[in-house]
Each structure stands twice: as structure tokens, then as C-alpha cells.
Amino acid sequence: MFKMTITPVNPINQATNEYYLTRQNEMESNVRSYPRKLPLAIAKAQGCRVIDVEGNEYLDCLAGAGTLALGHNHPAVIQAIQDVLASGLPLHTLDLTTPLKDAFTAELLSFFPKDQYRLQFCGPSGADGTEAAIKLAKTYTGRGNVIAFSGGYHGMTHGSLSMTGNLGAKNAVQNLMAGVQFMPYPHEYRCPLGIGGEAGVEALTYYFENFINDVESGVVKPAAVILEAIQGEGGVVTAPIKWLQKIREVTQKQGIVLILDEVQAGFCRSGKMFAFEHAGIEPDIVVMSKAVGGSLPLAVLAIKKEFDAWQPAGHTGTFRGNQLAMATGYVSLKIMREQNLASNAQERGDFLQAELKKLARIYPCIGNVRGRGLMIGIEIVDERQAADRIGAYPADGELAAAIQKACFNNKLLLERGGRGGNVVRILCPLIITQAECEELIERFARSVADALKAVRA
Image (tube, rainbow, N blue to C red):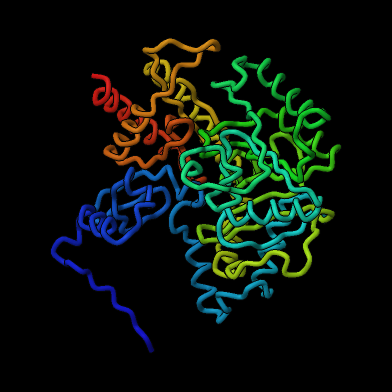
């Protein structure tokens, strides 16, 4: 039987982060991103903790960009993998069914209104899911245009990138998918209309409805509207409830497919199973990935039955039958329900936001704290400059980067997002404890002070 032995290339220097990062730099493409901001080589991890090859322990509030809902190596997840390996079940089945797939499908559908949705298994990433959702909307309606929103993120594949707001990756790629119309997304700190507050939300709500209904808008009726109920990479921007409700109302009246991208915000992270539930709406298609696979690659669509317009093999993908991911996803869904992790996310998130807002009174460079549950954004600004017409200070991406670096030095792993990377983001595992939340705040406060000394002293 074949046996693989892993032999360190350089056993003398193998226990340093620098050794592995140098080798990664030599062997991997320039496209890698996280090691540039979080320069460590991970040796092991458990729960909310990561340990590097030098023995340093970090509090992980990145959690695989939200993938690790149960944290690292949850015992139930490890047991599920071991059970599949011992069972003789094939690991790869295309879209052939198995008892495990049947159980996972039934469990996931149980979180949607009974008998109203079907599941479609896609390729293993969220971008694959958004590609499939858009193709289905075009197939169902016979139309070609799509409305997306500024600040949105739907992936890096050709079609999903065309619907993503950030221009960084788009500027280098010509001739992306045609027919994408962007519209403004409400923002509590940086209102795109320069109005702010409830008046800004009212204006944007009216603007969307009028734009869709206006026969002189210049844009033909779209096949779909795609959005995130909480924009993640865009800086943790939460959609106002009345705005979401109006979008649902208008799309339903006009026969436009409403697609909710719940890849990052879904699965209890927002304090509810799905972030759109805060508005009490039912999308036509829901895109799911990240936490749905219980830490392993999986992407799934939930499709209202009347919109399931596919012909057999109308959309395929080799790895849509990942049995290990269905096993880990199944146990993760069970734990989310049985341990009411949505409630834990809400409770811990409320505590974190309250403490961060206290810090904002000490450090005015924290311009805004926002989010839902354990999806929190901390907008870093230059309060020394003049505020705009609605009181928002200019973004300070340099200071935000310094805060992230200081957090790393203080053994706290966080990511940034938003315009110019000026929003520090918290995506803790849903199992984070109160004590760990207090530790997070202590390390973050220390890191803000360290970063201010480094950048502004």
C-alpha cells in the first residue's frame, strides 16, 4: 500500500515562520494575499485558537473568512470525517445520491419554509454558487441584465467579479460579463447620496423602486437582482430592513429573480440562521457556501420550486458531490440548531459592539462600529481632517493596516475590508466564549494604541 512520509526540506530551520513563508514566496504565485498581512505558518488549531510553528498562540477572529462557524477542529466535525472514512462511502459521487447526502439535504432544507425550496449542489466555492444563480435567473426569465450593488462582493470568477463592487481586481481584467447595472447600497456612515440617517434610507428605497418602474430609466428589465443582506468584504455594511423589504416587493411585482448571497453572512453569523431573515423576506434563490460545508468546500443554492428552470445537466460541476463536506456540514447544522448558536452570536456580538463603541469614545479614529451578531465592522478614520456634509471623517486605510499589524503582534488575527481597506472586520467562530470576547477587546484596544503610536506619533 502506498504510504506518504512528509520529510522537512530543512529540518534545522523548520520551526520558524520565516522559513516556511520564504519557501511559500518561492513556490507560490504572487496572487496569495493572507500571508502578506498575517505572516505565520500554522502548525495546529483548536476552537478559536491557532498555534504557529514557533509555538505562538493566536486568538483567531478571522475563522477562514467566516467558514469555521464551529471554530477549528470541532470534535463533532473531526468525528464526522472519521466516520465517513471508516464507512467505505465514496468521497466523490458527482451528483449521485447517498444516504449521507439525503440526510444533509433534508437537514439544510429544514431551515427554509416547508416544501417551498429545492437544493442545487454546485462547485465548491461561493463564486461557483453565484455563477449558477445568475445562469438560472437568466434561464428562467429569458432576460440578460443583472442589478448588483456598489460595495458588494460575489466572488472572483468572471461572472461573479463583474457583479462585485471593488475595482481592484476588475481593473486588470477586460470584457467582464456584460449587462450588469450597479446601484447604490445604503451605508449608515457613508451614505452614497450624502444625506445620511433615516432620510438617506428613505431616499435610496424610493430610488430603487422608481428606477425599476421608470420606463425611461434606460435599463431594460433585469433577469435578477443580487445582493448581500450584510456586505462582508465591502466593510460589514448592513442593509436596512425597509430597504430590503422594498426590494423584495418590487422584484416580486416585476417578475425579477431576487438572489441573496448568504455565503459569508449566513448560518447563524448575523444572529439569525440567514441575514435576510432580519427583514422577514423570502428570496427566490439563496447562495450558500463557507460555513455550509462545516469547514470543507461546498456550495449550495436554495431555489424556490417555481424557479427551478434547469434542464438536466444545465449546470454541472465535478466536485458537487463532496461527501466529507456533507458529513461535516450535517453535524454543523445540527449543532447550530441544538446549541442555538444564532443566539450566542447575537449575545456575543452585542457585547463586542458595546465595548468597541466605548473604545471609540477613547480613540476617535474609530469612526463607526456596525454589523449584526458576530459579523462586525470597525471603520477607521482620520478624525484630524474635516468631516463631510453628514459628519463622516475621511477613511484612514494606513492606520487600519497598522491596527491589523499590531493585532497580529498582539496575537489577534483579524481581516480588513471596505473602501480602501479601512474597516477592521471581526468574524469570530460562533462558539466564542464571553472570556474570549473580553480577551479580544483587551488585545484590540492595546493594538489600536500601538498602531497610533506607530503611525501618528
